[in-house]
Image 1 (cartoon, helix red, strand yellow):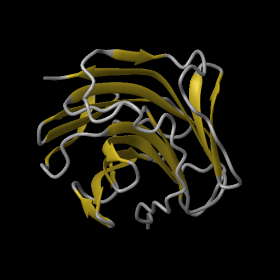
Image 2 (tube, rainbow, N blue to C red):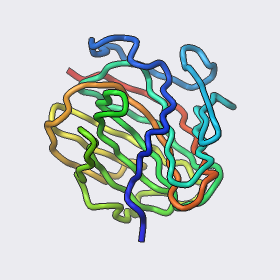
Image 3 (cartoon, rainbow, N blue to C red):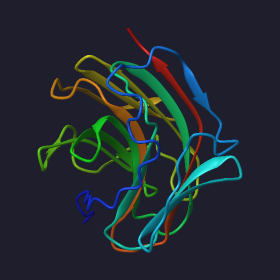
Image 4 (cartoon, rainbow, N blue to C red):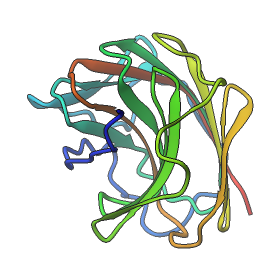
Length: 205
């Protein structure tokens, strides 16, 4: 049985909400060709770095996650990013975090390298499932394969696509604005490595 998503708050924050509360209004594209404004850090449990034109998240220890945030505020948006597991067990998790208030409130849209997906909200120390818990979906390319993740958030409406197929559609009005992040996590085995590339975020009115 797949374990539940367990954030133990090992947090690698890149560019932590330095832009203040004003939401972004311009399209942002990030090929990860240079470090630029991204702030990278690491410790014994996990690390992030820019390498070979990608944002690389490495989780060394079981039961841990690491994430990186844009440092930009968004309300409504359309987002696309390519995510590729490059090492470690397929029993992993990775995906998109939106409307983040540091590590206290956010939505998580997640997949795994063995073909599962889920959506959830974290707020006030509690997880709330917004989809079935780790359900299989044929759109997810399994193993060490690239998946194109797309998310649209418009008010309380959210749509999550993988490789062009709609995987999750839901309504939730709890969180309205915040940062955007990308994360990877390990369940029973460590050494999870996931690379993110070709990020595009389009703010929506």
